[in-house]
Image (cartoon, rainbow, N blue to C red; front, top):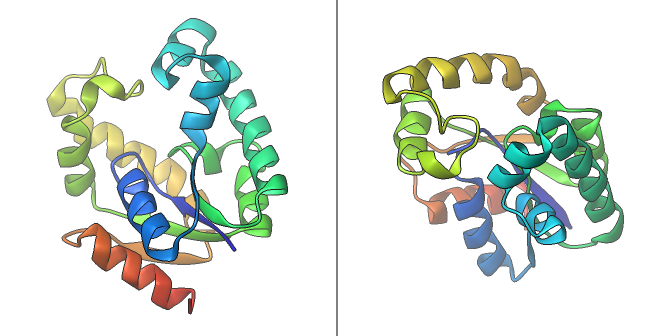
Length: 171
């Protein structure tokens, strides 16, 4: 089974996917890492050097390759992946999708800890980030809400969230 963890940056996709991968003994597939490895650049460098359009095209190409080739694993795509092209439909066809939902407050607290590594917010003032996140969530929630399951992540550990996902998927 291929399980896709979806959500906004800071929702816990990377952390929870690692935890779930260990619990289920399934390989972890980090989409951004695959893109970085193929281009020998960080996601931030790809955005800066090649632009977002180039990144989104590569993201779609590599996403489709993973979804068509992998039989079992935990897929952790970027927060914007479901929004572009028909990515959300493909994710739902080829995997069990889980939306990791978090509040604006939780997301803000988490992304501020990694601000320099987040191309979308790196240049924003800290006090502008909550509004930026709220606006993005408003735009992206229609895509995230198409996931097969939704798990709230506020005030939960990665272990608790992983157990909830395992229970939802009846694994």
